[in-house]
Length: 472
Ligand code: HEC
Ligand code: HEC
Image (tube, rainbow, N blue to C red):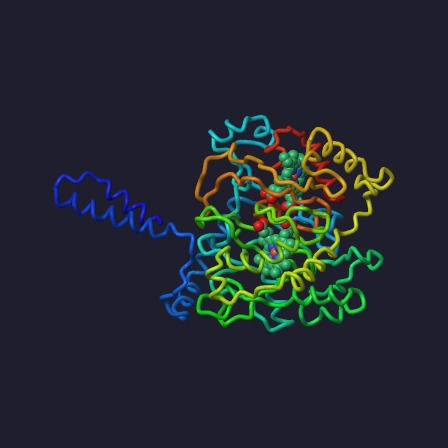
C-alpha cells in the first residue's frame, strides 16, 4: 500500500519529455487497473500458491504482524495488571480497574468534557483508544482465539486452534473468567453448573445428562461440535497447519459466555471498513430481541443459522460452498441449538431487586449515588433501562462528530453507524467492551459515554457510576 502511494506520487512528477509522459500515462493505467482489481466483494476461489508456500510466508511474517498489533495497543492503552480491590467476576477472576485509554498530551478528561465535538475533532484530541479497534491483522481477518483456550481445547480434544499466521493480541488479565460459570434459566436453584470445566464434546453429556431435556442436550451437542470455517477447514485455503475439523460455537461463546475471541464482521466491504468484533456473551439472549451488533437479526434461531452460513465464511457463500459449509436443518438442529442458547442466564446479582434496581439495605452510598446518576444526569438509562439495562434497540452514537476518518493498521476508522444496545446485566463479567473490544475497563466505558453523550459528569459521579455498574 505504502509502496503504491509512493509510486503514485512519483507518477505525478512533471514530465517534460513526451516519452516520459507516455510512460507515466501507461503507469497510471496500470495503477488504475490494479485498483479496479482490488475492488471486488469476492475472495479468490482458485488459490495459485501452494499451501506450503503460503504457510511458510505467513508464518515468517507473524512476528512482525503481532508486533504491529501490540504496538497499537501500547500506544492506546495502559495495559498493566491492576485488579480492583474486592471486585471479581462470577467465578473469582479480578476485575481490572482504572481508565486505561491514554489521554492525548496536554489535556485532562475534565478539559475534554468541556470542549465541543467540533473542537475535539479539529484539534485532533479524540483519545486514540476511543477509535474503532482493528483486528490483530485487519487485512487478513478471521477468527482468533486466546492462547489459554487453544491450550484447553488441545488438551481435551486434541483439536488445535493455533493459526500459523496470527496470535491473540490482548493480555489475559483483560479477558473474562476462564472457564466461566454457567447459570441455567430453568434451574436457578443449582447456581453455577460448570463444575469449573470448559464444556466440550468430551464432557457435555456427563455434565448435563439429568439436568437438561433430550432436545436441549442435542442442541448442546451441536454447539460443541466442530464445523468447517474460513481459517479452519480441510482445503488448502486455511490458516491451520493441518487440515482442520473446524470450530464449535462454544469455542468463542465458551460455556455459553465468552472468551473474547475476535473476528471481523462479515457484513461490510471493502475489507478496511469491516468492524473488528468481540464475541458477545450468550447469557441473557432469552430476553433480547435483536442479534448481532449491526445486523439486528430478529431471532436467536436466525442468528444461529446465520453464524454457520455467513459469519463462519465472512458473508461469502461462494467460499462457504468450497470449504464445506455445514448447513443446519432449521426445523430440528437450529431450533434445538437456539433452545439451548436461551437457557444461559445472566449471573446472579444479589444487590438487585425484582425491578433490577439496588436494594437500599444491600448497597453502599457510592453505588446508590451511581444509580441516581445512571438514571438521571448521566442519561444512561434512556438507552439502558432496568431490569436488564437494554432497550433492545440500535443506536447511532455518531462518534464521527469527534474525529476525521483515518487509517489505523489497515482499518479505516469512521463512525460505527447504528449498533445494538448490549445489555449491562452481568457486565463486569464480560470485558473487553463495545462491539469491537476497543475499551478495556468499565471506567473506560464511563469516560467514553461521558464524552459521547456530553453529560459532563464530575470525577465523583464517574466513580459512583462505575461502582453501580459493578453491581449489575
Ligand atoms: C469467532 C468466534 C465465534 C464463533 C465460533 C461463534 N460465534 Fe456467535 N458471535 C461471535 C461474534 C463476534 C458475534 C457478534 C457478531 C456481530 O456483532 O455481528 C456473535 C454473535 C452471536 C449471537 C448474537 C448475540 C448478540 O448478543 O447479539 C448469537 C446468538 C451467536 N453468536 C450464536 C452462535 C452460534 C449458534 C454459533 C455456532 C454455530 C456461534 N455463535 C459461533 C463470535 C462467534
Ligand atoms: C444513546 C444511547 C446510549 C446511551 C445514552 C448510553 N449508552 Fe451505553 N451503549 C449504547 C450502545 C449502542 C452500546 C453498544 C456500543 C458498541 O458496542 O459499539 C452501548 C454499550 C455500553 C457498554 C458496553 C457493553 C458491552 O457489552 O460491551 C457499557 C458498559 C455502557 N454502554 C454503559 C453506559 C453508561 C454508563 C452510560 C451513561 C453514562 C451509557 N452507556 C449511555 C447506547 C447508549
